[in-house]
Structure formats: C-alpha cells, structure tokens
Figure 1 (cartoon, helix red, strand yellow):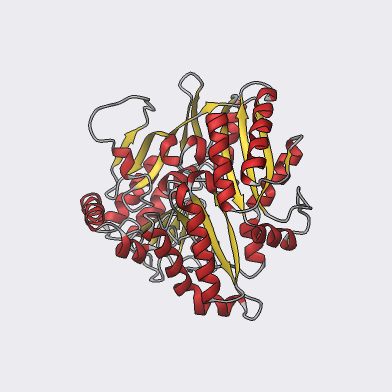
Figure 2 (cartoon, rainbow, N blue to C red; figure 1 turned 90 degrees about the horizontal axis):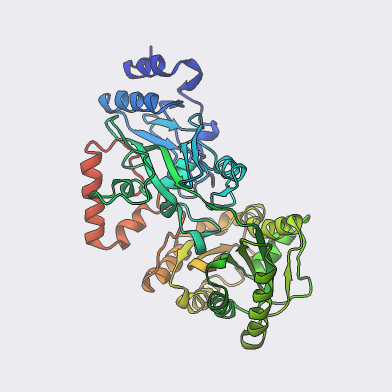
Length: 470
C-alpha cells in the first residue's frame, strides 16, 4: 500500500507522470558524470505550474524532501537525489511549452522544461537570437540553465543566464506560486526577488517558467581559428581585438595543444584546421549586422598587429556554416574526448583575465611536479576568465586508480590557487553536492551567513533540494 502522500500525487498527476519506487538503474537517478547514483521514493513529472504547486504542497505537508531536475546535464550532482530512497525527484521535462514570443519587447516566455536548443530555434524562427549557448544545449533545459546561472560560449558579449532573465515564475517550498512574468526592462519597486532563485540550484524553490531577453539576430558571423604560442599571447590578443572591434566579439575560446590533440585522437572524424601549427589555439567568433565584409577587414588588420606584437601564428576563417560547425565541434568535443580517454579530474575555475596566464603557468608547473607525466587539458572561455583545468592520468596509471588516489589533492591544489587569486572554484558549473563542503570552507563568512539566513527564511524545514549548495 502506498503512503498517503504518494496516493495524493497519483491523483494529481495520473499514472503516466508518476513513477513509484523507481529502479536505481533509472537514468534520472544518475548524474551526468556518474559520480552519484541516488534512490527516490518517486519520480514525478508535472505538466503545468498548477500541478507542480500541488505536488510541492503535498510533499511539504508530508515533510518529504524534494529534488528538482531539468535536463540532468549538470556536473556537480545538484539534481540527483540522495541514497535514502525517501526523496521525491521532480523532473520538469514535461513542462516544455513555449508560451509567448514578443518581437517588440524582444522576449521569450517559456516553461522551465523547454530544451535550450528548442528555445533558440523558436527565437531564430522569429529572426531573433537567444544568446545562451553551450555544448549541452540539445538536452539541457531553460529552468535548469537559470537555476544554475549557466554560462556557456557567449558570456563575453551577452553575459550569463542571470543577465538574460527578465521575469520568473517560481513554486516556493510550501507550494505557493510567486509569479513575476511581466518581462519589464525597468521595474524599480524594491528587492529584485528573482535574483534569489538564479544560481540557487533549486534550494529555495522550483523555477516553473521564465521570461528571457532576446537579441537582434546578427546577419553575419565571422568564425576564426587561430594559433597562439601561449595563454599570455592569447590574453594580449583579446585585449587588442576588443580595443579595435569592441563588443563585436561574442566568443573567445582557448584550447591548449594537449586538449586539442587529445580530441583529434579520440574523435578521429575531426580535423585540425591548422595542421602545421605547433602552438596552442584560439577559437573566436564575431557578430555583424551587415554582410560582415567591413568587420572581416577590421579583424584582419587587428590580427596583423597581433602577429607582430604577440607572436600569433596562422589563422583560418570559416568560409561557410559547415566549416564554422567543424571549428566549434573541436571545441565542444573536448569533454567527450576526455571521457573516452578514461575521464579526467575536472575543474571549473575563474580568475581575473589579467591573472590568467600567471595562474595557469604556475598551476601546470605545480600539478606536473605533484604527478609527473599527468596530462593537462586546459581550455575554456578565456574571454570571461573561465578556464577548465582538467587533469588526466599519466600513462603509468589507470584512469580509475589515478582519480581514486589523486582527485582530492589535485582539486585542492587547483581550487586553492584560484581562491588565493580572488578567483572562483566554480565559474559556471555551480556547487551542487560535489562542491558543497568547499563552499562552506572558502566562502566569505558573512556571505555564507546571509545565504543560510535566506535558506532558512524561504525553506524553514529544509525540504527543497537538501544537501546541495549549503
């Protein structure tokens, strides 16, 4: 016989949207990196905000903890239930309707379970741009993107998810619905409440819908693949290009030679656009609102200066969408290449751009001294100071043994190096369960106290995604 609260959920949802006592092999109970395998009393998939509100209300009254989940693509275990089998997993994938596109206001309103790529396509069909973009966009969901304040590939120009949100609708931990889907550009009426829920990873409430800001769609994109001797040269080149081109630069991605070579070995259908290059690489993209000819000339002139001043090497510019896609596949396939090579000890750190080169050089030196022969896959969003410093096993160790013996000390080395430079141990992947203790030990004490007070105020019984973030 089912507990009374599950009987109530069954009446609310119907049999097709409620899974009672799901098997541990259910993919929704395993996080993207397979670091955590949870159990759940039930998996519920509401279709409307009203259903979601009723589900949360029932669970709250029964004192049952809830774990919100979007596309389950996160890297920190923030959307996986614990091993107790007592929590309810609330998966939002069936709340997948785009509710409105307002061309005059440049906004899109959608339910939280809309897949990011579908939202991008809906905007493109109206000749507008949703600039939030990342490798997982074919499966990650809008609510999860906002709840984790996702970054991605275009932060340099457009900012993180937080900066694209004009309005939110949230189901609070007691089941109440707070709705602010007006999508206003200006609303100076006290606290900006939506900010509480962006980056909170579902610990303060469940985002059920959002209004996101769109942008005019560029008429031309210039995508270039560039050889650079090192990170310092890449940073200097970025500064030069911004001086000459302003905010026309939407992406500026760095790939160490080792990261790119690993990708080419593991995914043998990919090709190096600069096969004769011996250095490292930058993938950059610029947006133009005309045919792009003038911007291409400006880029060429700026790169000629960079060649002379910063030892920049060859550069190739994509001539069509196919070539552009090939360039981006190289960058976006690095995580998959690491996985095929046995996996890596992953890090998602950020420091001020002016400190990036010194940070990376010192960290590589110290890591190699600690584990001689280990392989360092260094890549990321140089334009916003976010680097993924991932470490793979040396040839003498299996990947499993390497991660088992060295994951904690290497991560401590990387994170302390970032924190000591006033940087962040989590630039875009969030905290979740994986980095909860690190947050507790490194966050400013006053800031941590404020976060805990907010959590106690909005979720006094600690039922909303417990054990995550705080």
